[in-house]
Amino acid sequence: GQQVMQIPQYQHVQEGEDFTTYCNSSTTLSNIQWYKQRPGGHPVFLIQLVKSGEVKKQKRLTFQFGEAKKNSSLHITATQTTDVGTYFCASYSSASKIIFGSGTRLSIRP
Amino acid sequence: EAQVTQNPRYLITVTGKKLTVTCSQNMNHEYMSWYRQDPGLGLRQIYYSMNVEVTDKGDVPEGYKVSRKEKRNFPLILESPSPNQTSLYFCASSLSWGRSNQPQHFGDGTRLSIL
Image 1 (spheres, rainbow over the protein chains, first blue to last red):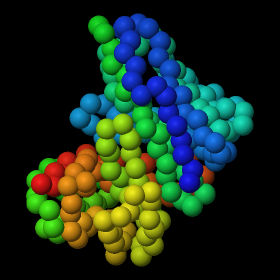
Image 2: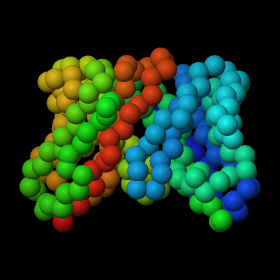
Image 3: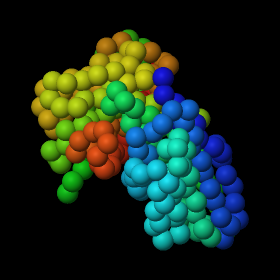
Image 4: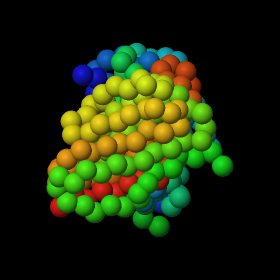
């Protein structure tokens, strides 16, 4: 079945450094959503990308959807302690299922 | 306030004792879903429902049942729980499904321990 691979599993950075997480699929994705889960919390929707090559920005966060719609990335510039959490990508399969990546847990040294 | 409400938040029970985790949303959403979250495995979809009386299996449906008799409610039923179902469970809903730009709204989660 469709799978979405997400790397890295963990990332520990110094506050102020950049952070990137990547999602890759062997099949073409119709869209991709990104969620953030704070420690002890529930996933919260960040953004959805639909178009090939799409790039969207939210303040220090930049989201990209690959030209072939098989990969996506989330980049955070100059991380802050409020960015701590686990970031997930997710996509709908053709059967209306939702497939989540395994997540990237971001921790930050103040 | 728009929300997805799950109950209970925490439950410790024993193998074989039937349990139900309730989920209710007040946003008139069509699509509802149950996930389990395990370390290193992310969120895996158990069952989903595209509307009333329409349910289908996700990636890990074994050992679970669901029903969607009303639009707002989507309970998760474990008829005979086993220790491998110990996990953190999330219910989520979205206005619709598929290609349209509809984010999922998640409940606060239910931490289930089966001894």
